[in-house]
Each structure stands twice: as C-alpha cells, then as structure tokens.
Image 1 (tube, rainbow, N blue to C red):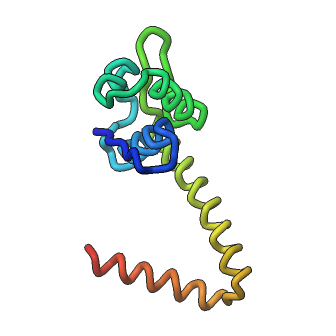
Image 2: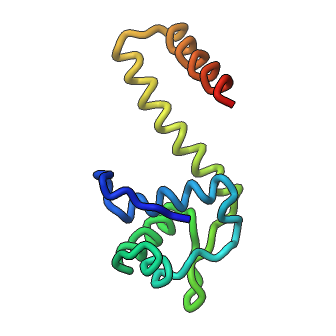
Length: 125
C-alpha cells in the first residue's frame, strides 16, 4: 500500500500523505473508505505513530480526509478531491509558466513544449 523512500529528503509524514493522495486519486482508496488506523499503519511501516498522526492531520487540514472521533479517518468526497487537485495543479502550472516567461520563451514555444510532452506521453501508452 504505502512504501517509504529513506533516501528522499522529504519528511516521512510528507511522503505518507503524498502516497495516500495518490491512492485516492487512482481509486485505491474510494470515497468515504476508512484509512488504516494510526497504530496499524505505524506498525506496518515500522515507524513512530506520531509520524502517521501528523500525516493524517495534514491530510485533514488540506481537506483530503475527515475524522470521526472514536472511529478513525476517512477519505473525503472524490469530487472535492478532484477540485483540490485541479486547484493545486493550476498553482503549479502558474509557477512553471512564470518560469518559462522569465526564460524568455514565447507563448508559441511554451505551447510547443507542452504538445511535445503530450506526444511523448501518448507514445508510452
């Protein structure tokens, strides 16, 4: 389910929350499904339960999960997740676009780069 990369410079809680987001986006964790308990996931990953708790708290703060006292943590609505991911993507694209303009690329060059990447992705399928 979740694997950690100890060579990754990001904190473990960030890796866990990112992996859970990925699982949600591909349907591995359906809407309203219960996440593993903090203790169970900590044992599974052989890490401190506080790390799992921090990951879950961050996911809840971002709106990806909700908690029910005494019952656990659950996946938020998939439609809302899609909106959050789209908003996040727009922000990242805006930063990339600004970088491209700073490099002096024209709109046509930027669109050309995007089309090139799409074509490469299409040939990999």
